Length: 439
Image 1 (cartoon, rainbow, N blue to C red):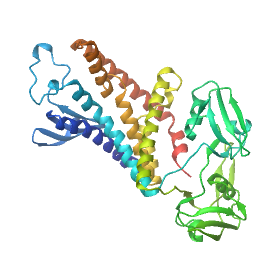
Image 2 (cartoon, rainbow, N blue to C red):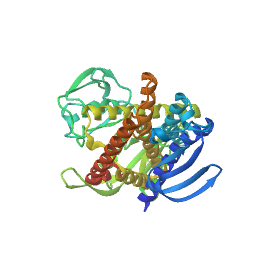
Image 3 (tube, one colour):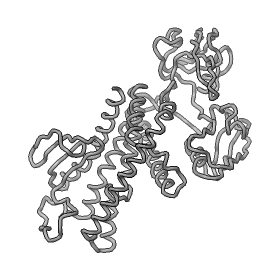
Image 4 (cartoon, rainbow, N blue to C red):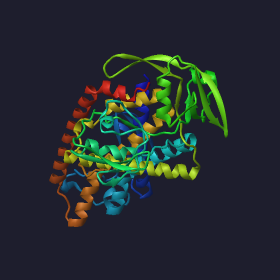
């Protein structure tokens, strides 16, 4: 039930803001709006206010704004002169602005969500410094160590951890330039393209700041608070979140003294981690320790929250454009595409983790929806923009026959993609659960 509610919430919100973008520009441009629908036909319920019918339709995977005169498939002999509130009578610039407004609203929604999340909960800081290396992994075999910093990937400087790893899954050869703890630079070469489910074996460095303390767990009972910085455990100086987690995982049932920094003071807190079973890669169960804390963020001001929200949206947008580009050129596997089932699955899992996780997921999907609709593909907003640009440059209108052919071809391709991604979703439900189910 949580999965269904979360899925409907995310999809309805993003469709609403997308169509609201089209609707707002239409009204501002003096274009008449006949219908504003959340969902695709058939119509379930509706109410007419003025010239516009506002309705909810049966198929939840989309929505639309029906404008006066926006009909590309009216036979030429039936075409009439456009009226003052007719879409056809507006300039190319107005039409393109209206078409792009839906995607703009999706991107703006992501900025707004990130802004409030960062302003209220802080910013998760990640650098290109390695926090942990999985024993026996590809990274470990190449000699990478915790504390190393990735400086360049294939000769390009990197600022984000994700940027340093992406070429591993797109290029047949990846050269990482790494700076070790002594400040020495060395190059590590990976002579193959990793499979989509193949883990390189490194995690980014995060400061050991406590974000959330889980009720009923040892940390909460012992008095650890949100915002505490874990400085040492049994006199062992903690070097980041991964190091702290490793010590606790290896101390099930062992009495520990955890030293935290709180309001400029050091506080020693005795506690004993709970014990739990964890399945290893070989299927064997391992006894680990848990105290019930989740990673925290750095608190920042309003201006920095907005800056980071805008930066995060631009970054994810560029990565999404890059993904589609690599998909077209064959550098990325089409198996990475996901559809409604995957979105529902991830929305449900995000909702179970908490409202912050759900809203972060919503922002990410909003970016993907905004970028997807700008692609120059028939049926999508970007396809209509491409036709307008082509007609403007060539000064020749597409014929009705050509427009219908493009629309039909685009519809068939989209239907095929929907079937394909749904098949992908069904095949990897277990994988999705493992990736996003949490601990």
